[in-house]
Amino acid sequence: LGNTDALRIKLKNDDVNKLDGDQLSPLHYAARYNHIETVKALLDHQADVNIKGQDDMTPLHYAA
Image 1 (cartoon, rainbow, N blue to C red):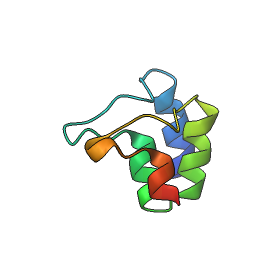
Image 2 (cartoon, rainbow, N blue to C red; image 1 turned 90 degrees about the vertical axis):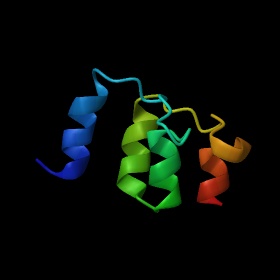
Image 3 (cartoon, rainbow, N blue to C red; image 1 turned 30 degrees about the vertical axis):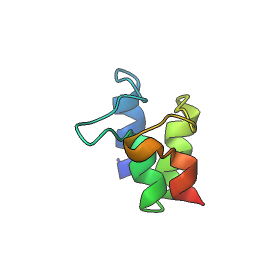
Image 4 (cartoon, one colour; image 1 turned 120 degrees about the vertical axis):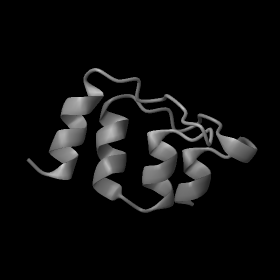
């Protein structure tokens, strides 16, 4: 399995919008580090593009 395939399996049982200790979601990280396939996988699992994390930043801010 590739990393994206493994992620899709894991997402079946996890909250895709859960914030970590730094108040960032998986989509924040994927957008920040330009992991396009991961962004697509997260969006396929209803990741919220408008979820506010640290400093009220959304994944869209990081993607811009």
